[in-house]
Image (cartoon, rainbow over the protein chains, first blue to last red):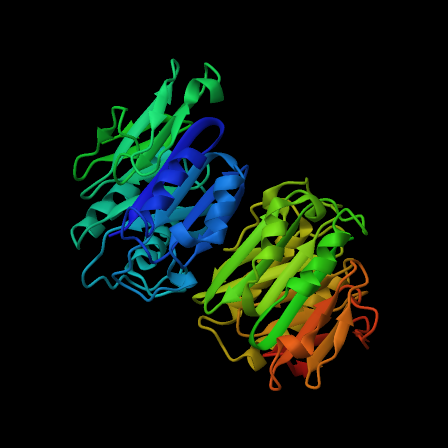
Length: 255
Length: 255
C-alpha cells in the first residue's frame, strides 16, 4: 500500500509541514520505501519532484522540505511497490497533458486483472496505477473534444473510479490545477483549516506549527491524506465509495 | 535568445560539469535570466527540474549541481524570454507522452506568425516553442499509430524542423530517451569525449575536470550546446540546416 497527500488552498500555500510528516513514513516511521513524488501547480505549470528511493533518505525530498514551494493544488505520494518494479517511470504522481492543461494523478491500492482498452494515452511504466490514469484520460478525451465544465466531467470521473474500485482497491487524487478530485475506496481522510487557526502537531515527527502565525484570516487550506497526519486536530474520514471535489480549499461537490 | 544543452552517452553519466557552465550563463556570465530547466532520462522515466527564475540564483539548480543525476540522455535549457511570459508553464524543456514514451524538447530561437493547426497535443503555456513541439508530435502521431524505427521518423522530423526554420530561428533538441535529435538553424556546437580522456576547462566558471579520472576506457559522451562550454577542447560547429541524431554518445545519422 502507498500513502497519498493532497492539498487544495485558496491562496498559494506551502505544504512543508504535511510533507515533512509524509516523508517520515517513507522508510522511517512507515514502510513505504519504494519511492515518492509530489507535484505542485504554479499557475498552469506543474513542478514535479520524484525519486524512486525512500523519501526518508532522499536528497530531493530534503530540498522540497527546505525550499517551500507555494501552490493552490498539490498531489503527493509515497510508494510501497506491489505492482511494477521500483524505478522512476513507476513513481507517482503521473502527469499527462489534456486539453492544454497538465493533469496529475496518484493512486493508492491495487487492481486485479486490469487490462484497459488501448487509447491515445499509454502508460510509460508498468503499474496498474498509471494504466488506470491513462484509461481515465482516454475516457475523458473520448467524451469531450475541449475542456468541459467540471460539473460535466464529474459523472465520468465517479463512474470510472467506481469501476476501478470494483477491481480492487482504488483511492486516488486527480487534479488539472484548477480543482482536485479525491476518491476513497478504502481509506482517505481530510481536514480543512481556516480562521481561527490553531497549532497542529505532526504524528510522525516532533514538529508543531502554529498556523495562525503563518496565515491570514481569509486563508482556507484543505489537506487530504491516506491517514491523518496530525494528532491534535479533527480529521474527517471518507467512507468507502465517497468522493470529494475540492477547489480553492473548499468542497465544490461531493457524493 | 536562449541556450541549449544536450548530452548523449553510452553509460549513465552525470552532466554536472557542463551544467555548471550553463547555469552561470543564466544571469551571471550571460543574460538568460528568465528560467531554466533540465530533463534527465532514467530508464523510461524522466526526471525534470525547472525554475522560472534565473539559474544563477536558483536553489533547485544548486541541488542539481550538488546531486549528480546519471543519465544517457539529457536536455537542458536556459531562457531569455522573447515570446511568452516568465512563468513555469513557459519554461523549457517541455514534456509529452507519445507511444508510451516521454518525449522531451527544448528550443532556442523564435518563430514569426506561427499558428500551427490544432491537434491532440496542445500547448499549456503561450510560447512559440511549446506550440512547435506540440505540432511536431501531432505530425508524428498522424503519421504512425505505434512507435516506428527512428529511421522512419527522421524524414518527418527534418521536414518539420526545416519548415519551422523557414519561419524564424529554430535550434532544437528532442529526445524520447532512446535517441537525441539535434537541429541547427543558426547556432549549435558539439563535442564527443572518448578515451583517451583529457582535462576540460569551463569558459564560464573557474573549473577544470580531468575526465580520465571520472570515466572508463569504453565511455563515449557527447555534449551538444548553443556555444562551446569549454575553451581547451575542439568543439564542432553545426552548419545552418544541419541535424545530427545521437544515440549512446555516437552519431547515428546526420544530414
